[in-house]
Length: 189
Length: 214
Image 1 (cartoon, each protein chain N blue to C red):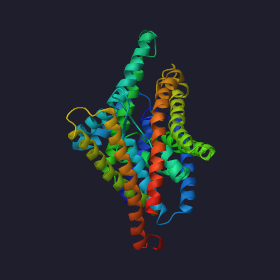
Image 2: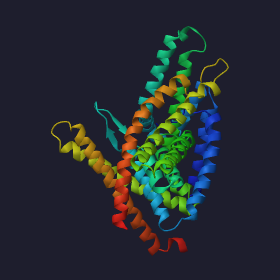
Image 3: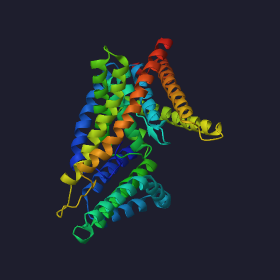
Image 4: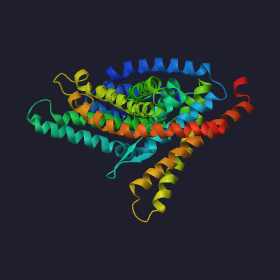
């Protein structure tokens, strides 16, 4: 419990530090430290982080390079490469730091200073996991029942059916949880 | 729409965190006033609903899809503060439990999508709801996407102005307002149309469902 709060504090300090330093060498050193701290999981953590930021950062980097080329900025200081190196290292460092934090910390215990917050977070998280699985099921169900690519109208119908199911399920889940809270005297402890 | 980590400078996210923290505290107090065995699970259910609405892909002609956010629907159905807390919780969960989005961008995203989005939707609903429910709901959904997109574009676009090195090179997001405003806002004006339709249909369905359950 105490350990999780310390992790949360260290993580927030690390995030602040990663946005206050701007030298690529220090950002790379920070990234190396995070990977060192993640031990045997370093390769998978780095791979996951790269995959997470790849699309957005590639788009930003290529656009920036294109703009620099258009403005003939490669021959002038500061180098666009330095800007991109700094930007990508920082994003990767922050993403790796977040993944390490997620892997090592129980967020529910780190936030257990508030009973209501822990409860809402726990309940929302568990329902979110259920909904995520249901969402995958809906997606796979449509794919498995379609020999060819579903038409636009079929995909609208599938999305509408999924949304109406989620709305209905949310209301039922809220009612069930409310009854469970009442029966266990949550507000009278 | 929401911004990943590493593109927002501390000059932006630290003041934004202070503002967001103040609003979260106030919103929690407002919701807590009515916090009982009904509202607490309701907030959790709203959060989960909002999370999954962000996952559902709405198809567009041409084969592409957009993702709804359900901000307008939540604000109109459950109130602005409840929607603000639910959207903030979703963003926090995405950042801290699923590693999606970012902790430095969380206050900006929460203020843009959760606060501005929810209250803009609610204002449209309150102003026009008595005159024409369908138009009010559609506008609520559209505004709940368009206004946050504008705020996110502004937050990103000012980064080169407020965070650059001695030579003028950007330290965080590298594009100015001339790029971010059209690149972020224009697509979201279209996404807002899908969100508007979702608000109209979702609200009608929810109202029918609530009266059936009552």
